[in-house]
Length: 284
Image (cartoon, rainbow, N blue to C red; front, top):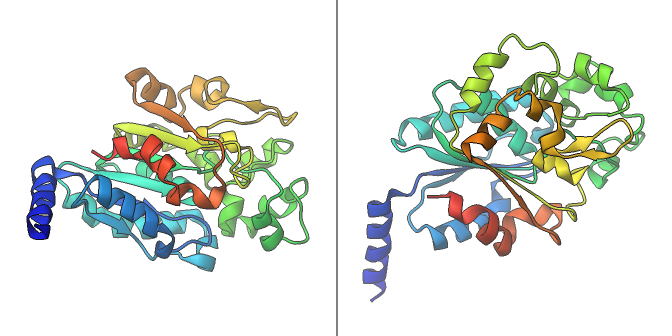
């Protein structure tokens, strides 16, 4: 009986042909953190080929994001080439920004669903345990002194540190997020937008009890103004001007926000309700 059920599962996977799933981890993570997520995927979509890479693990995740983009791109590209019907991305925390870098700079990617799982897509500005651990001598109000230097930009968290009180310095110094958002002059912005818009679905997952992503709405492209009042995605300049395609995705009906209370940052990928509500339906 077990053999028959295994055979049936393989048959379903072969007939339906679930797209391969690529998971990109976050700060201080490694592939071992995603055991539960792998189990959820295999239960709901049996036979799915899931790849989690042991690249830039743990302290190596502090390396500059463009370096990580190139490393992950080299590992993921062969999977894309072998997937005639495309692949899905699930990108967690800092990994969500790495995935944006890949999607913006890879002209022939075939990513179907880009699922951004509690990722600081609009930037980070908050006093968190991560910050105390990494920069014990700094707090959010003075970290710009370090992050907005050439030395600071060699550390991943500084690549997406966005101080709403020092936007000029951010726009002049941010080598990563300000380029992705075309907040600083980017000669490649038109091409990057075209590349990014190859995705079929953008799913932005986050919630008010995250405790790390600050403001939590950054996981859905909301961010602080200079009074530290959160401006939601549809009132953001980068949405209104359709800088890299958010407005286009929304007009296409391909932009989805999934908010969930009661989930702490480290639990997004192991919470079955999150998977069931916000992820499962996009893995077909």
